[in-house]
Image: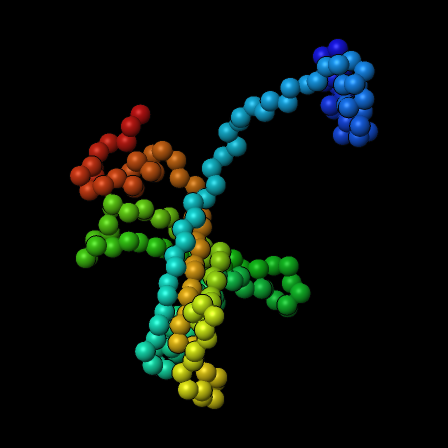
Length: 176
């Protein structure tokens, strides 16, 4: 009975309904408990939200230049013609949280990362206001930007122990 029900589950992929018919005939169902197995660790993701409110056209231009650089460096370079399948990978970023002149060890230490998403929203709520227009258009008065970075390296216990410690424990030996 149970072996037939188990085989019925496998056959059900090829012949939908077979398992249900077998279950009705035998009165036995397979418990589809899933066993947990470790499949690995995903790269850590870090997201940063910025709200820009330039006070004049020059500040609006500076913000657009900053966003352009992030957008430029998050994309690959196609090698050869536009139809080429060969690309040079996007730029990577080294992000550090600083306190005065040193790295702030109370915050996440981030490995080399790539920018995987840059979402920009112009205007606030239902309102879209700009500065006076010029030959390039009209610079927005409010810009929200969300940048999402993924680390290139996967951490393990030893790197977390070494890199994520608060200053009071720096220099401690790595556990066995």
